[in-house]
Amino acid sequence: MKVINLTSSSNVYTSNVYFLLGDHNALDDVNTLIDVGRDPAVIDMIKHLDTGVGKKRVERVVLTHGHFDHAALLPTIRDEFNPEVYAFHPPDGMCRTLKDGQTLKIADIIFDVIHMPGHTNDSICLYCEQEEALFSGDSSLIINTSGGTYPKAFVKALEKIVRRNIAVIYPGHGDPITRHPKKLIYMTLDNIRKSKIF
Image (cartoon, rainbow, N blue to C red; front, top):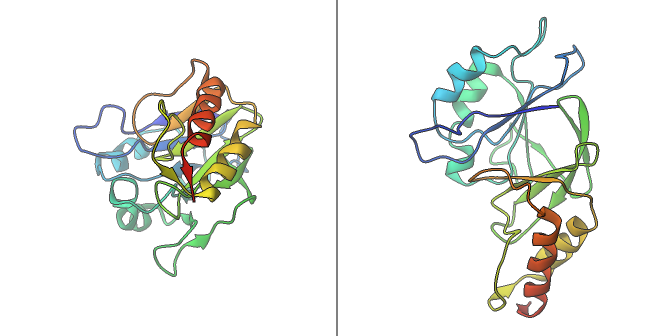
C-alpha cells in the first residue's frame, strides 16, 4: 500500500488528505482518498499521479467525519472523479453509510471501520492489520493529562483500538506518529479512566 499525503505542503487550512494506492496499481486495487480537505490543489496533484491504467483515478472516498476542513472539497471531487463516498453519518443521500466493525477494501488491502465518537458523533478511525496502520481523523488518541469528561462509547472504542497492533498513526492534522504509538494510546486510556466518564 502506498500512502500519499496530498496536503502536506498546503498553504490552505485543511486536514491531511491521504491518497491510498496499491503497491502495483493493479486493476482490482481501490484508489481511495481518506478525507478530501478543502485545498483545490489536490485535484491537480491527483491528475499528475500514476494511479493505474484502465481505472478511475479516485474510486472511493472515506470521510473520517464531516467537519469542513475534512470534507469541504467533496462536491468538487465528485464532479471531477465521480467516486463512491462513504461516511458514518452521510451528509446527503449520495453517500454510503459506514458501520462500526465493517470491513472495506482500500488500495490493495482490507481496513476495519471503528466508530470513534468523541470529537464528533460521526467520527471514525480506519485500521489496517496488514500494515499495522491507523488513520485517526481528528479522534483524540493522545491525551497527556487526566481530567475532563468523555463518553463511554469513546472509551470503549479506545479499548478496541489499543488491542490492535499499531506501528503508525496517520492523524487528520500533523505528521504520522511512528514513535511508540501504542504506548501513547495506552497512556491516553489510562488518563481517561481517571477522568469523568458519562
